[in-house]
Length: 377
Image (spheres, rainbow, N blue to C red):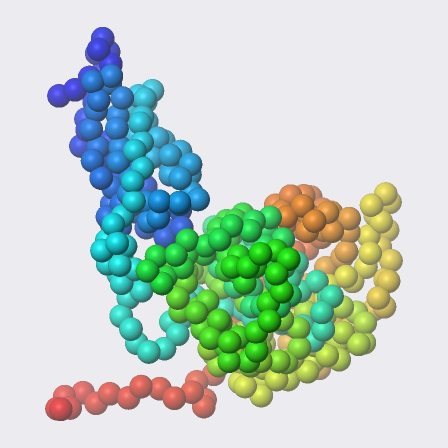
């Protein structure tokens, strides 16, 4: 039986303290640290401080201070006011390898389905704000309490690091990478792997392999929704993702302009030819909203989103205005639904996230495994 300090009459139950700390989740793996073998000794020093040993997945773990805050809060939930000393170490190579094997799960030879709802956000041409739509929808879904992942599949023109205001490299564990988390969303982007001013010069086979690794070699954890931010057009990356993630539904983004609508229609037709279902259409930059009076001006014409939705036989899910708040949020690296939730654009984007349909792909044309009950080898 131990006491808090030399004169404190408050008794400290070290077993209860350890149980509380054991339930702390790794902020990247999203599982209790005790289950991951990351919790070491929990005891009390002669000075009355609780001492906790944490074994990080890597000595250079960028979330060390997050761990410190979470562990301290867990200890003090059992023993309010107690001083906490946290000693950080690192898993040895064997423990790292075993943990990676556990997290990977069985090798089935196929890309795992990482979420029950997957949306491939696509446009026919660049400059229509597809990535801004994707980023804000992701944060809005996370604000609903969902576990959300965002894969920036625009390998050459990646913008997710800027939109989320983070560029740190992902933590790797024996060939397994962990998403970079920001604003409640788990992120993966080529931009986390290269210098900001370094061009990505990859061709078809390398692009396909990179996308495979982003899906199979990234520990996304248990997601509710995965968003894929596709590059514009119908090139190699879009085709590869149709093969790698056959359960995705396409969300087509256009502006009111005929040129944007026509090329967005081509991407949607490509998806339909590959039997990928369509989730709907989003019209971005519907009007430019004046920051002073709130008046909206249709700078890019009208009707493109509605016409595309009619052509494809799907719903026009949202018409997103272009306002100063949306532009400033992108520059600041904080999605507008989080930075300025009262903005007109933020209100529409939250409604879009709430309106996303759950789309199931038809099983027609998809090979299914066949087993015969009682069959002998």
